[in-house]
Image (cartoon, rainbow, N blue to C red; front, side):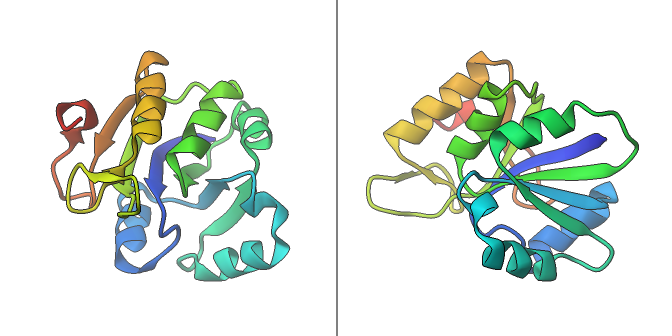
Amino acid sequence: MSVELARVDERLIHGQVMTAWVERFWIQRIVLVDDELAQDEFMKQVLAMSAPAGVTVDVKTARAAAEELEADGGEHLLLLFKEIRSALALVKAGYRMKELNIGNVGGAPGRSAITREVYVSEEEKAMLRELQAAQVEVYIQKLPQDSRVTLFDKL
């Protein structure tokens, strides 16, 4: 499998933003990594129906995704995370992630703005630093045509 993009977006599979990334990388399959959602059969069905035409969706735990991603294949994948903690869990489960796109993490109590679309708490900043220590390049980029912004330039 070829992971074309790993992205944190709490909106998950949604409209024009997701379609732009799917088209940009010719995504054939979305692997959503979330330990909690992997146990929710109803949400798995909803997410599968939300995908662009021709794209399959699998929802996996971090451990199951790490094991599967070691297999070799020609499929173009998008790794999708609802939360930063799930991306870190995948790395801790043994997957060697090269890059992580932070697309949308909304405002909430305890979070401060990094950009208009990205808000993080102190706990999430620590998680991002762990990812950086694991040699993951973390950047912010809403749409494919937007410029990449190195996350650590904003922290």
